[in-house]
Length: 349
Image (cartoon, rainbow, N blue to C red; front, side, top):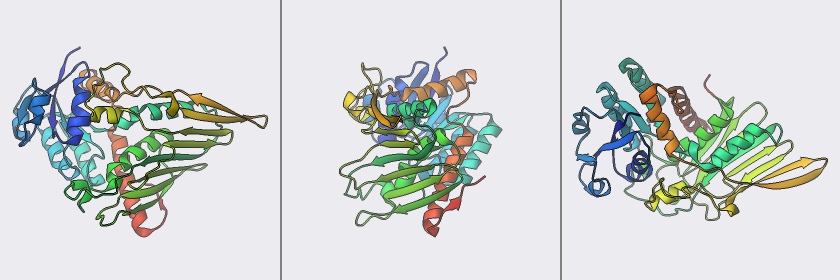
């Protein structure tokens, strides 16, 4: 297996916590360079990587094949375009760009340059979502009528200097956590018929949306995705109802908190979830309800970068395709418009 040399643009929370440790733990990838404009924290954490101060300096390193863009959303278009035109493959942090037209431009440039571009959707490899996918595939609940997906937190205080809290393109909770929940719903159920969205600011002084309730309408079912920052006692992470029962899952995938603590995916029992957080499958047969605990699958964010490595090295299809990335951007824009008009809107064909 040949090794793909990787350059990381940005060493804030995203680059430092969600990308660099994962890239470093994937065989066949080498974190060769990191763009950090002023601080030297990357040098201490990754002494074998070359620390540079600009994207131009990064692109002057001929061995770099893949560039990962983890900067604030408004910068994604310009940085990804620059890297593609310099002949590099590109991973862009979710949501991708700030508009679907920007996303379409990057996909077009990637095709013209014969390079890969994909979006970082690591939560497809959450253990709880992998478990949910298996429940949907196995079909013990019969025809599905309702799917609920919640990412609720308690962060009542504003972060005044955080770019996500400022009224700029691509800021707010809908562009932060919405891409995760939308991606999972679209992976499970495909393109919906229509969408009803309520994006709002709930915390005092909030300048951007910090809560949303969005319904994706399918012919025989509804998918509700919800997030806010004022839930002190969270409910289920997932709920799935069908004609023969329900599946309910509490708790959160442990990988995010483990990464924030500085743990490595190489460590034993990485992402193993405690039994008390396993989901409950309740099914009815002959008017009798039976409950079964469902062990949570082992989640692993490395699977995302393993797929990117294989796509570059051997042409393996990308798990997060450009078609899906464009669909995601259309969904984000539709949610904004639905909320603005206070009505249900048809999903783009």
